Every structure is written in C-alpha cells, then in structure tokens.
Length: 301
Image 1 (spheres, rainbow, N blue to C red):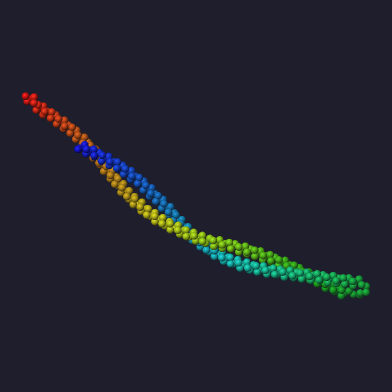
Image 2 (image 1 turned 30 degrees about the horizontal axis):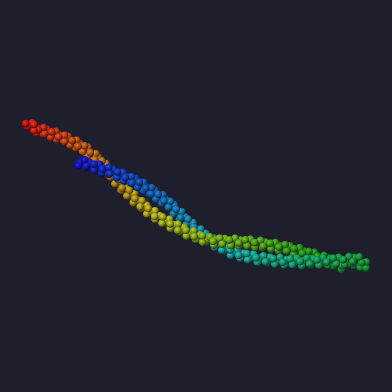
C-alpha cells in the first residue's frame, strides 16, 4: 500500500509538473499576444488620432474651398454679365465709328470734287488772262487778273478742306480700328468669363461631393475611435486577467515547489521506512528460525 501510494504520488507530481509547464507556456504565449495586441492598439490609436486630425483639417479646407468656389462662381456670373454689356456697348461704339468714317469719307469725296472744280475754274481763269494779255486790242486785263486771284484762293481753300477731310478720315479709321480692337478684347474677355462660369458650375457639384465625402470620412473616423475605445477596454480587461493568471501561476509554482519538497521528504521517509521494514523482516525471520530451532522435535528427544 505504501509503494502504491508512493507511485500514485509520483504520477500525480509528474502530471502536476507537466500541467504547470503547459500552463506556463500557454500563459507566456497569451502574455506575448496580449502585449502585441496592446502595442497594435496603441499604434492604431496614434494613427487614428493623426487620421482624425487630417480628416478635420480636410473637412475645414473643403468647406473653405466650397465657399471660395461659390464666390468664384458668383464673380464669374457677375463678370459674364458685365462683359456682355461691355461687348454690346463696344459693338454699338464700333458701329458709330464706322458711321463717322463713312461720313468722313463722303466729306472727303465732296472736298476732292470741289478741289477739282476749283482747279478747273482756275485753269479757265488763267487761260482767259493769257488770252487777254496776248490781245493787243485789250487795254486792261484787271478783270481777268481778279478772276485768277479769286480762283487761286478758291483752290487753296479747297485744298485745305481736302487735307482736313483726309485727316478726319484717318482719325475715323484709327477710331474704327481702336473700336474693333476693343471689341475683340471684350469678346475675348467674355469668352474667358463663359469658360470660368462653366468651370465653376462643373466644379460646384464636385466640391459638394468632396464635402459629403469628408463628412463620411469624419463619421468613419469617429466610428473607428469608438471601436478603438472598445478594443482598449477589452485589452485592459485582458491585461487584468493575465495579471491574475500570472499571480495564480506563481502560486501554482509555489505549491508545486512545496509538493516537490514534500514528495522528496516522503521518498526519504519511505526509503528509511523500507530499510526499517527490511531489517524488521530479517529480525522476525531470525526469531522464527530461532523458535523453530528451539522447538525442533529432535531436540525434545
């Protein structure tokens, strides 16, 4: 019975040692995983905070961009109407300058016609004066001389009118050219405002979509923050459980050490008891042998 109990004790001790080793191994793995999970949660939380800051900054900038786009769209609309009126005015001004040029050209033609008439009259007057001067019967050519003088004055005046008309035509031509250039610049500006307005109208839906996406990103980031908070709570609970398990493991190791020492002490006592038992058996055998010798039949005879 003692030997059987000893064998059971050794079996239980070996089973306890193996169980303690497996438990320590599993606990070490759990601690490593828990530390890794905690570090991952910390890193993820840091990244999430940076992401939240980025999302908030992006949303703020997106809202500012939308406001800017709205202002630009309104400015483009105002500029389009302003340049439309400017183009209309420039076209009217060009038509007026063209009318002035046409009138100046007609005035030039009239002045040139008058010049030709005055030059023809002067030529006739000069011919009459020449005929008078060559006629011996004429005693005075004052009338013909006066006609030549008057014709020369008329030619001079007609030339001045032609020169003034030419200057007026040149001035009107320059005014027409300036008005045409101004109209082309205004039309180009109007074309650019149309492009700006079209671009702004196309950009506004994209800007609104960007605001929507930034709001969704913020909601996702907030949901991620909630999930991380839950994960941090779970990780903290896991750490508490592991600390309790570590304390239990150390207590189990202490109990196992105590059991090992007790088993070793029991082995020593059992070995000593076995020695005593063996010696007692020898003593009993010797006593039995002595009694047998004492009670031998032949000794009685």
